[in-house]
Amino acid sequence: MIDEKHDSEKQVEADSDLSRRDFIAMSVAAGIVAAAGPASAAMPVVESDVTVKSPDGMCDAAFIHPSTGSHPGVVIWADAFGLRPVMRDIGKRIAAEGYSVLVPNPFYRVGKAPFFDTDKVSSFNFQTDMPKIQPLMASINAPGAAEKDAVAFVAFLDA
Image (cartoon, rainbow, N blue to C red; front, side, top):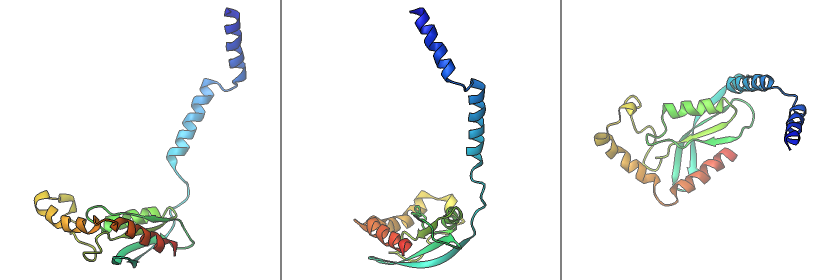
């Protein structure tokens, strides 16, 4: 019985030509390649302000895409502060990786973006700023509103 165990261990060692040292070296090399990311340069992008027709009205949006070719679409749903320069910057970074990006104004039912002074967004004061956000949020919380918007935004990207 002891000899059988010893023989099976030898067989496993014989079947594996990869040493522990080789395995570690290959793992480190794979990690370096994965961490380095793609070697290609970012694609040049084009940004334009567009209007997307939806069942609830006309939505102002930023459309950012590589300057040439056809690319998969991405919709960026903005946070509580809506369409603003930082959301456009996120769209530019994604577009530079080869995507057509639509950044709609989620509050288009109330008015055109921007709704907030972008310099003051980082100093949000719940007492004074929350009353400004509540009517905006109410405009997108209506039943079916987000679903209708999604259909319109994807249709825009598919056109």
